[in-house]
Image (cartoon, rainbow, N blue to C red; front, side, top):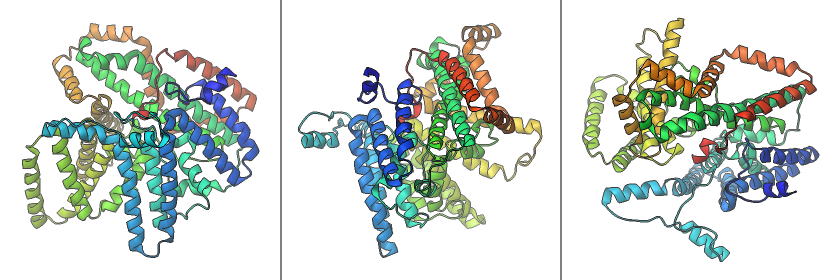
Length: 554
């Protein structure tokens, strides 16, 4: 009973996360009740909404108030967009709703970033004051919220983007508004995807709300496979590598030769993939057990043969969201307009603001001159520039979505420039359509190492830390065979895990499908025994250091 009481009380040090036993006790209780109510659609929506809000409470405490306000506001905005009489009024409503959602997101996610940048640029000393906490304390007549700090609510980026997609899809007539408030809250708060995605689109999720629950043996086995894969990725690939190797190198890189930092970044690429794709694998498997199908979020991204191919395989739900709600509205690869130029100017000013590299003004003037010359001389030049600018804007926004720092802006910018370069290179590359094994290997190798290189800005949070690591690698590379063997021996178990992880990742998809087919053919008792053995072995890798999912920070 004490254990169950702990599960249902709030402790910010013990959220309900997929890799802990408490969650599975919670999920077992949910499925017991769900099995009794799933036939009644409205009751099911109410029940899963209540469970999901409790789940969010366990992760974010009183930030459920913010979630509740978002649910109420966006539900009514969706209805108002649908019932508005003119296109102009619909667009105004969408603009207001999007502005309010983005403003709330920006307040929690970027307040420190802009305040620090402003203070640094203008030599001022403004301090953070949380007005929302102040108003909340006044309303509740107490000191429940800290007014001198702004804490980012877990999952805010995810449910904000889902909410925006809802009323935009209504405007585009891709979906009809839900029939009642609880169907909407079910869509937004459904607990498997609430905290870390995948980002669910209204047109994909809403049609399933009123479908009868169905789960056959094949679906059940597939869900179990998905969940076990996710747990293996999180506990073994992500946490074990991080705790026993990567964190040690990142915390004290000067204690190791520079080449060890390179090994750590290769390991980090596997860690961040295992951590994030592990979460979404579990989310997809849990949803499948409850009769809801979520779309795939990762497709073997390190098999990508180009940066463009990588971003079609990595975090697919965010990529498709940015494509459909930002890149294409800006003009996509066909055209550009005032939105493209305005966004480019804002990003340019923003880069100067955060970096204080005033020399960028001359770069901007030079690029403007090249643009004017190109438009006058080169056919279709404007079209290509518009496409490239739209792509760069999208990737910079994608970087900012991940975090409010100069490092994330640089990370997004580098990936945007790489995509632009690839779009031009593939037109003249003699190897673009070649299927030779050596060419394929080189493309995968080059893509993987570029993505790993840019992740230095993703992993290291402090300003200047990425360049410090690069300088350490360059100046203190220090590769010697004996040192290399010593490192491999010292961290032998970690490198075995990394090696096995990459081998499994790069296995052909038909081989993986064969294993899954074999598991599905087993009778249920044998499946249960197999899963029990895997789980017991897997949890031998659990360390004393608690590692929450990395994307909780984003």
